[in-house]
Length: 295
Image 1 (cartoon, rainbow, N blue to C red):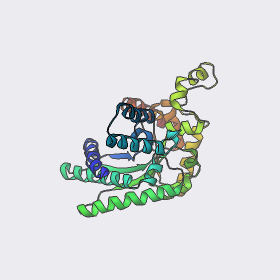
Image 2 (image 1 turned 135 degrees about the vertical axis):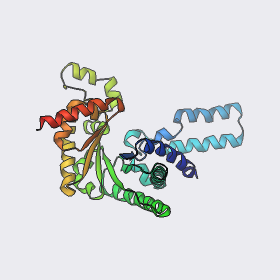
Image 3 (image 1 turned 180 degrees about the vertical axis):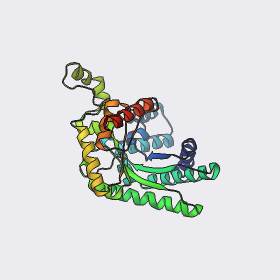
Image 4 (image 1 turned 45 degrees about the horizontal axis):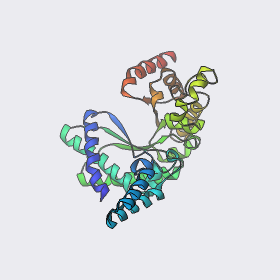
C-alpha cells in the first residue's frame, strides 16, 4: 500500500526530469541509500519509549512505539554503508524496483504523449557484486516495463545496466556484462571500497596529512587513484567488453569533473563521464583536451 502511494510521487519527479531532458538519454539509478536513512534513529526511538513509560503514556501509544523500536533494532546495522542498500535491498524487497521501473516508464510515456518526444531511458541497478543479482533485478525491471508498454500500446527504447562500485564487480565484469546493457563506474564508492577508507571520515582526518606529507600525491576522492582504483576501472572496461564489445561504459562521481581523471577515463576507453552540474564545463574541456592529445 505504501509503495502504491509513492509511485505517483516518483512518477511526477521523473516527469519533471524527462521533460527537461527530452531527446537525450537519462540514466536513473534505482534506490541506493542505506537502510538506516529510512528508519527512526535507534537512540531517539529508545528515548521515545522510555519517555512514554515515565510520563504515563497510553498503552496503545506505548505499544506502537515499542513495535517501531523492535523493528528498528531488527534492521539496525553496524556499518550501513556496506549493509542492506542498493541491489541488496531490492533483492529483499523486489516490489521496490518493480515500483520504480513502473514509475520511470509511466513518466517517459507521459512525456512522450505531452511533448511528442521523450528520453532514452537507462535504468541502473546499484551496488551489484555478482551476476545473479543483476540477472534477477533485470527480470523484475523488464517485466514491469514491458507490462506498462503493453498496457499503453506504445514502444520506447530502454536499457538496463549496473553501477560498478565494488571491486568484485570490476574483477568479474565479463560475467556481469552478460546481463548488462551498460556499465557506470561509481568511482566515489569504488574508491572507498578499494582503498578501505570512509570518505567522510578520511577527509576530516588523515587524508589531508597524507597529501601534505607526500604519502599520496592527491586526495583519491578528488582525482582518481590511477594505480589502484584506476586499474579496477580499466580492468572492468576490458573484461566487460570482452563479453560485449559494444558495451556502453561511463563514470558517475566527482571524478568525472576532474581534468586528470577525465584524461585517464578517456584512455581507459570510457564513452562518457557524469558529474555535478557546476563541473560540466570543466569536464567538457578536459574531454576535448584528452581527445586532442590522442590525435
